[in-house]
Amino acid sequence: MAVTYTRMGLLLWGSQAVGEPTPGQRDTSRAKRKVVKMLIVVVVMFGVCWLPYQLYFIISHFRLNNHVCWWLISAGQDALMALEQLSCGSH
Image (tube, rainbow, N blue to C red; front, side, top):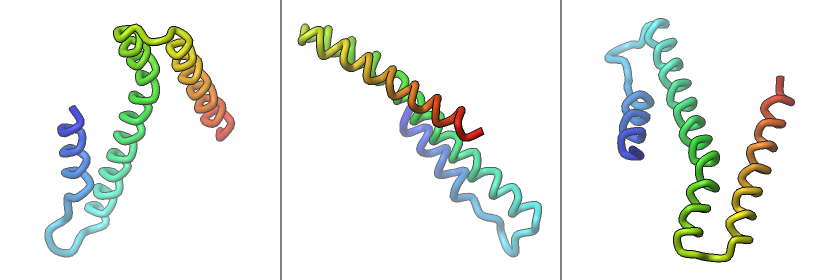
């Protein structure tokens, strides 16, 4: 999955117009770069949201301390609430 997203981002980011770019081609290039930036944000947010949950199962599979598991879940929830406050406060 990481390889696919990386290839897609590089393909969109690195595409150049042949010859002298027209204003329409410049707009298209800017739009593609915005798509790549949004793709990066979505993938990072996906990782941030699912990492504590997946770590909980990894830790519980190896039967590590339950306090560590609950700490990971609570840290993930705190991070999500902070991100939510930052995004709501910017509007």
